[in-house]
Image 1 (tube, rainbow, N blue to C red):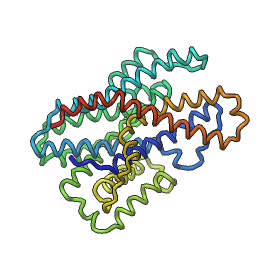
Image 2 (image 1 turned 135 degrees about the vertical axis):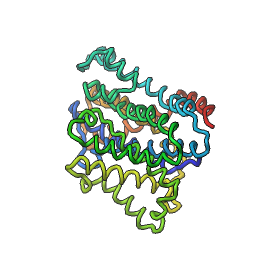
Image 3 (image 1 turned 30 degrees about the vertical axis):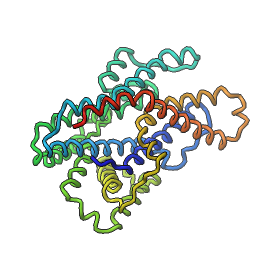
Image 4 (image 1 turned 180 degrees about the horizontal axis):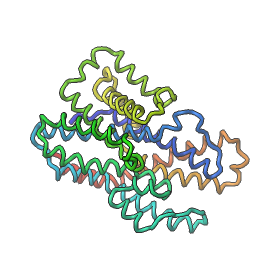
Length: 356
């Protein structure tokens, strides 16, 4: 299937937004200077939400195309997901528990582990870190895994669902499922769905958009450059201003779902021939999974380093903030690159055996 370079760049941008969201939070908690006065520094969760829409767009697009060709295999699908997600996920899970249970006490850094260790491990091992993070405060390295849990739960649902449905009925079933779930999610009495961040409707909306494109139902968006331009502008405003923030949760989620899915469609299929094919930027997109998974570790390292350096107190706050940002970003990229080339690549090579 044709690779979509603009979506690689999007992954990198979204991972960077998550880093920008978490960086001032930890700096503030540790008494270091920070800057978060602009709305873009508060869009980390929304960046993860776009990741969900993007995952639905790509995964359901892949499965649907394979269903049309009669080659979809649940076994191959799960093996590809396992080899891509599991190695790094479980590496971070293991490091996270070691870090908070052993390393911080050795360093003399106070941190309260307000959970049963066995329960925490089981919740993470069986892909319920979103439940773990909602019930307790296990620390940033483990808390960021909630989004991986949501995606894995989605994979467990979507593969058998689409396997047993005939291709001609997949679109209708997905639309019905999405509408019903969206209504239930925002209905009183189902607060646990919000508490555990079970925003599956975002993933399904991405998939619905992908199928609409395959069915050529979105051709009207390609008739004028004004529509894709408007979608891009609105998405930028979403992340850089508060114009598109609404007090009503169902309206906020509806706008988010529609706008994000249209934006991803624009980058992938309605970009007026504009594709970003810069070697370095596209590579950052390739290692974006590692950027997301390692950024909390890099951030903790940098903050600890600055807390231990006595001369930092003599520097201007602006300079400290700038140095923390640059160093965190650089170390995150370094970790992600090393992981991709020396760890993840082995499993990615095995993954190729399970392509059709």
